[in-house]
Amino acid sequence: MKTSIALKSLLGAAALTLPLMAFAESNVQTGAATSSPGATAHLDFSVVIPKILYLRVGTGSTYSSGALTSVSTVDLITFTPAAGTVGNGTAVAGTGGDLTGGVETAAIVSNSGNVTLNATASGALSDGNGDSIPFTQITTAATTLTSTTALPAPVLSNGVSGNVVLTAPATKLITQDAKWTFSFANAANVPAGTYGGVNVNNSRVIYTATMP
Image 1 (cartoon, rainbow, N blue to C red):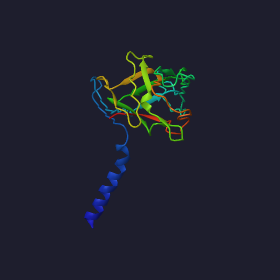
Image 2 (image 1 turned 45 degrees about the horizontal axis):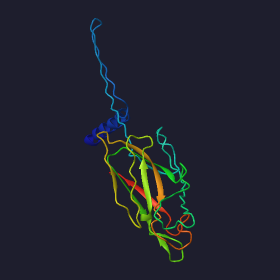
Image 3 (image 1 turned 120 degrees about the vertical axis):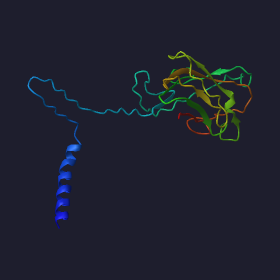
Image 4 (image 1 turned 135 degrees about the vertical axis):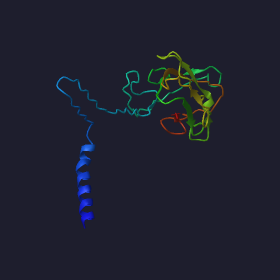
């Protein structure tokens, strides 16, 4: 019985001290009036930085100020060869794009090492009547925008493109952009029609960036 009462008293005293353990440390030192007592206290800090991967192709948010946001706008690039020039091998400039003239802003911002970029099409551009134009007929030229080195563009195909790998510096931070100018190679004669469109007839290409 005495053991039980003593144990309860001990547990009660321990419970009373638990809330005090959650507070910051304190330390009291005493000494004579002529002494110089010193007291110390400790405090730990932690900063948790999330992984950030930003990809922009075309219309999108600013990325130079650090205010990264998602924008759902999907641009349309249109090529219209003049009558009598179809298939003559002379490249055709596009219309549309956030920079106009078939030119798009492309940018990647990341903070966790190397980044791999590729592009995926679900098949050749179709007119819905059995005719098609392969995505290899659409070329992309990358030129500098604000970064010293232009962000390379994946080479489009009727499936998944090859990978473009951006190697991060020792800081693990990447901020790289470019102007991507799209052209239609116009290297083959094809039947009249509208190939692709707004998310129809295999028109949409999905650009994907990944990092560790």
